[in-house]
Image (cartoon, rainbow, N blue to C red; front, side, top):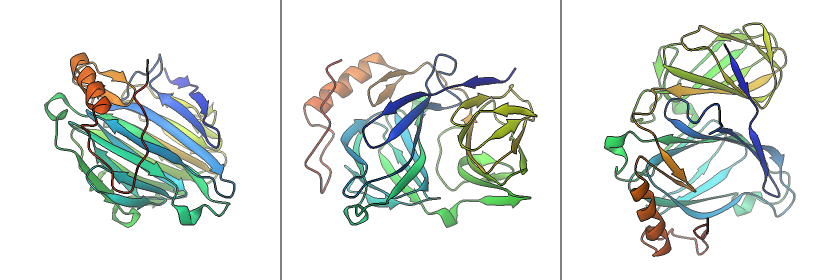
Length: 286
C-alpha cells in the first residue's frame, strides 16, 4: 500500500524548508536519513542564504538545485559554487565543517533558490572515513529524455546507468522533470524507494499525489509516475541502513558516545577553520 507523508515546514525568515525525512512513518529511506526541500523562493535585494559554519560527522551531504546558486566552503579549503543540475557531495566521515551562502555578487535582488539537500548515513565501516568534497557539473551526470520525461542520476544507479558520484552503499538518487501527460516507471531494483514531489500535480499508478509530499511506493512495485501538470520530483532510496543511527543536530552515528565526542570537539574548536569565514553556529544547548 502506497504511503503519502506531509513534510514538516520550517520558515527560516527568508526561506521555507520542508523536512520530508525523518518522520514517524519514514525514519530513513535506504541510506537517506535527512531530506530537506528548500524553496522555491526569490530573494529581496541584499538577501540570500547564509548558513554559517557548522560541523558534521558520520554522513555525506548531497545538494542538488533546480534554481539559484549556493557557495560552499569547508575546512578542507574547498570553495565551490553549485548551480542548477550540479551535485555537491561532501563526505563528513570523522569530521568536517562547512558553510553555505548566496554569493555576494548575486544579492542584487531577484535571485531564486529551489532545491534539495539530503544526508546519507555512511555504512558503519566508513563512518570515520577521511573527509572529502566533490563537485560534479551537470554535464557529467547521466540523463535520459523519453517522451517528455527527463531523469538525471544524481548519485548511485538507476535506469541501467550510474552517476560518477562516489557512493558507499547501494544508492538511488534521481532528479525527475516531467512535462504534462509524460510518464516514467519508478525504478524498482532498489530495496527501499521514495518519491518527493517538489512542484506540480502528479499521479502514481492513477492515484493523485499532492505536491510537496513524500510518497513511499510498495516495495518492489513497478509504479508509474504521471504528470498532470509540469512536475519536479526527486526519487531516492537504496540499501537499508546496516544498523540504527542516532541523530543529534548535525551529527549522525551508530554510536551515542561518538556523538558526545563530536559535541566536545565542536566546543573546543577541533573541527578546524574555514578560509574566508569568521562566523560559526554555536553548539545547541539542547
